Amino acid sequence: MVTHDTLYELYESYDTDALRAYQEFVDLLPPVDSRVVLEFWERADAELERRKDRIRSAFDAGETLAGVASRATRDQAFTALDLYSSHGRPVTVLVLDVDETLRSAGGTDNEIPLETLHAITEFHEAGVPVVICTGQTLENVKGFAIQGLGSELVHSGDLAIVYEAGTGVFAPGHGAETKQLLYDDLAESIRSIFEDVRGRVLTEAPADLRRGCHLQGNEFNVTVKPNYEIGSPAARELIDDALVYLLDLLADAVDEHLSAAGSDASIEPGRVDHRSLTRAFYADADPEIRRVLERDGVYPGTDANGRSDAYTDVLERIDVAYYEADAAEIGSRELTKVAGVERAFDVLDVADPFALVMGDSKSDLRVMEWVAETDAGIAAAPEHASQAVLEHALATDELVFDRGKSVDVLRTIAAMNEFALLRE
Image (cartoon, rainbow, N blue to C red):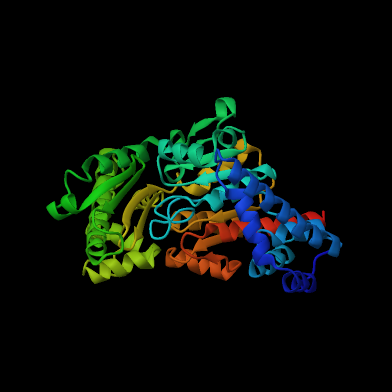
């Protein structure tokens, strides 16, 4: 059994910094057709094993401690032990966002660091399935996965990709279940509203929005992104305007759809117009949206009621999200990362999941909240994540990592799993 005292002795008595340096060199040295380099690698590998052997012979749990010390810092090891003490079980599946989580435009040239990719492959080799969970298209993610993780891992049957924020799930090697289009389950009424919004979003946009932004997503995830640098004042102003525009566009589409369907008055007669009602609905649900509407002077006030049941029912199935100076988005509440991850678990046969969920955005937050509510996982977020995500990560297990350093959390969880193996 490993205790805090054991870890103190380990990290005080041995040069674990040098041990980790040898381990990283042995793990990450790229293939080079050079006898000199090979001999240097062999000497480093022999020295690594010599240092590990000293630890193996000094502790009852020496094999575990040698492995932990060769990859985890002192702080990571103590965090890992505390996590296992708190949760009492190992992580059995990884759920990983890509952009601004595994990779970060601000610190890693927008590439996933080699040490992060290696850590993921080590989890896979230990029998932990991997779910890549992203807003990107399937083709984009497949390309990075095959190039970064390797075709063998991608096609092993233990990897799934939840793409376009829950539109579909791709799990190579699972026959008829390999590719599942989750939007097939959407009601035709919701599909028609999204088709309307998607078809009008750029053609009817004001000139400044058409020039200053571009469209991402698919027909069930309409995302407006700035052409300016994300986080800049120009991007912030543009996305604030885009949010108001998308809310009004959605309001028009819902009202027209309900009127065409012969619904019992989409808006109650004599009450506030449908645009004001839609703004109020989403402002009540999201304080960030309300702040934007208040700043722009278009918040309708708390007395903006009068939606019919039919109108409210539709809005409750459609999500509007705001990411300051980054994006404004309309999506389906039925096509979320949570729905995609649940389906991925089913395909991969993860019957009793305890997941590490890593992400930075509100769509990732829903997965984090889901595993927290069901006692099915741990959440981790980068320091630059959205405020709500950071608050959740800090309020649960305090797993917040520096920009571009997702590997720190992966190494912490790997150590946690090592401690768990001692008690099985």
